[in-house]
Length: 247
Length: 321
Image (tube, rainbow over all chains, first blue to last red; front, top):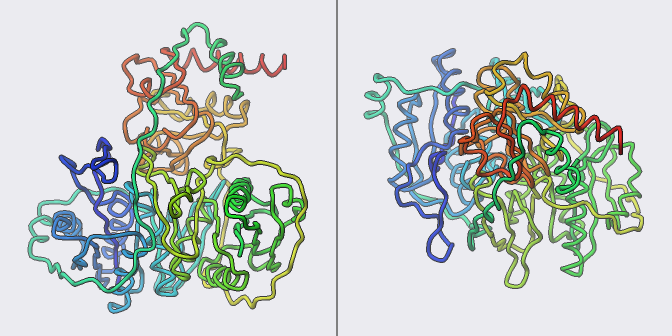
């Protein structure tokens, strides 16, 4: 089996969100960059777990970005990826990124492409589905469990009001979320080994961006909390009924 | 030329989120001087003509039972053909589970720009710019779609369902569907009565509840308010509650009208998943809990005393109104 795991570089989850240049750009000063948690904790770790069960499995990583993505790629190699490919271009939009990844995926004839369910910055939840359409293979989204038996996967996915289990044969694209795997921390052996694992840099292919970011806004600040005494919960219910008109 | 709304369904019923998408599509069509139609793959027991109430002129249906199970690859191929044959210019999905599975594939197939997570009607004064939620609800981005065909996936609970009156005609579609490549082998229903992403009210519990055995009062309050139940990340990680109840930056992002957080301190990652809620109520015994800064109403107190009091008051309200 040959896997390709998609990695995106995102701001750390505790980042304070601010914008600059007249609210047209995300202010990156002082931001800590991490592997998008959905890509790392779920997609990557599950791919590595499957490799641990079947050592003949090959896990390749892909990231679309400039050299500043190398630290997060090295971390993913430390967690257990075999080799990485970086497409040397700044992502422009989901379609642009998906086209770059689909191109690499086609050349490498991978059995499964793993993606996180979305990135925690732009929340597009788009790249996985686009790659599947560009490769014309099945797409199973929002996986919460993922079992592989030969060339057939049984994938449990979240649906409204429950879960559904799907069976699908390779090749396919899967997007992963909580439940698929447990977060791991790289060990010293992994970190040392990651330094010498291959990280191949390839140039972009021609692709259009179909959308562009015009500007950003922050949500309006809250007016402040209205506190109700703990010995009078009925007052809270009255406020929610008469003032907020929600119950 | 038209606006086409994807009608998602389960168990024979059109989903509420699709009525939001249809109301949004109808208002957009009015702005653009186009008509709005719906497309449905599969079969439902709902009367499709009734969708005219929400502004739809025609409902195009590919009425095959086999399509009642979502096979993304096949759905994307069918939708791409339908969009082309109907000459639709804007396609609206709900950004729900099905929308997240389908809209990106359709975007790639048609090379049509997609904005997912839209929260408002587009601004068409200068191009076609859609406001969407980014940074897990901590900010909004205004995104221009630059292609002739445009796709919008509307966040659930972001647009009000509005009835405009009228009835829709239903037209059958004749397109060959193929063999699905994904096979549904089992489905399980979640324990809650109301799906989390569709709920207007959500009652959520955190570590302050001390253990899974104390969730009875959360479930009772949720039941009384016709609300969904949710939880914070540590609660899901400790397996007190199922993963599909975890709301927050790395769980599910929700935007209900009312979010009641009980025993949750309000870490920035949790806030990211819930701060698009219209009204937030926080119940926590620690007056310094950061969640109070994001709340509209709050009670500083012990959940084990406060929540039963709220339950009593809600029962009293129901018995008098």
